[in-house]
Amino acid sequence: MILDDDFVLKSVNLEVNTDDFIEKCQSIRSKSHIKLNKKNIKAIGEAILCRNANVLFLQDNKLSDISNLKQFSRLTHLYLQNNDIVFMDGFQNLVCLEKLYLGSNSISVVENLENCRELEELHIGTQRLEPTEKMIFDPRSIEALAECLLVLNCPGNSISSMKELEKLTSLEELDISCNKLNEIDEVCSSLEKMTSLHTIACEFNPICTLRNYKGKMVMAMPSIKTFNNVDVTRGMYAFYKALTRDKEKKKAKATSSQEYVTMDDIHDIVKELPTGLREVVNRTEDYTAHIDLINRNEFTNK
Picture 1 (cartoon, helix red, strand yellow):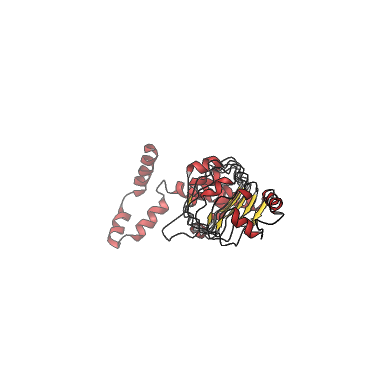
Picture 2 (cartoon, rainbow, N blue to C red):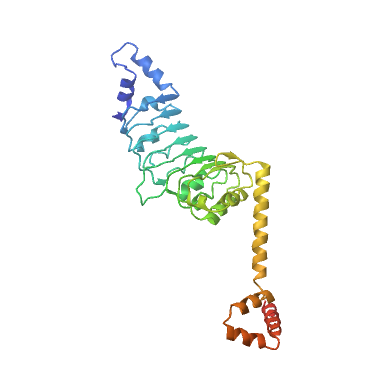
């Protein structure tokens, strides 16, 4: 099936030779919402009757070529979930688009959104990708969406880094669960740059196996409200803050204690020496003087 005017007329059971044909056509052209989901549509042709639509439902079809979407320049909401889309073509003229639903297709590159500067929500999760593929984001599209995109849902797309998303400074909600994020420091660095982000879902990533990954991520998001569908209260934030501070103190203390050789260190080392060598060391007139010298040298070298 091809989405064109003939198809639209047939979908509403309108015959050309009927008395009310013109009136019905005008009625279709005035509709703001056009529902054509589950119609076995494979391509988009010339559909003049639908060009005034603000909301177009095309989910659950068999669309692979969407380049002719450019004719629907008044769209604000577009539903394209569960089709066979591989390439994001046809969005160049959709300058009024506010919400775009592209989940469950075969898209590996998020692109051609440079003119969609009103886009607030992008739902593009669970793409049918090859085992070696991962979703990437065209920097030009990300830059164009930096100040408008508020919601990004991209779970289940083998994404291994959040670095490409850092410029989305207006983003408030992010679902990046079921991906392949494995570098907690890089993730936290990206989160620190996404200053408007207050809600995140990141379950089922490799980083989730790390101890205290939640604390590190929460502390990287000063505006955090919800983490993995759980509200972050003031008490929880204070707990993670105290925990992080305590770990830093322990780490600093451990580092400091390793800077100098102590008498306890020497005694422990001597105990591990073979008997003969241990006796030689014990007969040394004053090996503590040597240790003191080592410490002074360490301090001087710093």
